Structure formats: structure tokens, C-alpha cells
Length: 143
View (tube, rainbow, N blue to C red):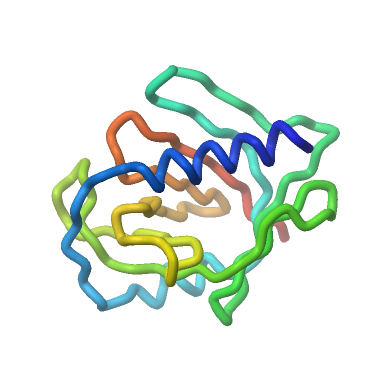
């Protein structure tokens, strides 16, 4: 459990030190918000900068639940490891230079560049850090 907490702390610190300005469009995509609500099981995390892949440990159940009231809860083996608010914004992707769906955790304390580009295809949630050499994390929907 501690490696998972350290990993998310490192990711948060890395995101907090990124310096990329984005143009924020306040229009939200209600479809992606509806798809996001629910429980998601952590599957993998890939760090582009180090070419390191972390996969879910079978004996450790890492989950994130997104609620309709824009609250989230992260758990490891049913123990809460992090909780707070989230928001989805439309802002420029540094990869495509086009507006995309970006997820911000605790939006009142995080600037728009500290976001993850999110996409949902079927039962897979992908979060791509909106910085070069960032990370890509994948989650599967819990039914």
C-alpha cells in the first residue's frame, strides 16, 4: 500500500511543478462526465520519462470512485488513501494542440496545467498527464 501512496504523491508533485500554460474553455462535455461517474480499478501506470511500467498488484485492490457531485475517493484494499473534489474542463492538449477533456483533482487548489487528458473507451479509462514525458494510467470500470 505504501508504494502506491508514494507513487501518487510523486505524480502529484511532478504535476504541481509542471509549467505549461493552457487556454481554458469553460464548456464541459456532459457525456464524459456521465461516463466517468462510478468505480474504476487501477490497472497500470506508465512513466514516459523513464519508460517504466507499473502494473496492478493482484493482492492489492487500488480503486478510484468518481461521484456525480464531483467528489472522488481513492482506496487501497478498501482503505481511503485520498479524497477530494474533481472537475472536468475543456482545455488545450499539449499533444494535439486542440481542446480536449481534462480532469483536475481538487480544482480549487490546482492550476489548469496540472491536469490529465482523459478518454473513456468501453470500460477503460485512460489518464494522460498533459505534460511531455509524463505518465499514462489506465483503469477498468467496476460493474
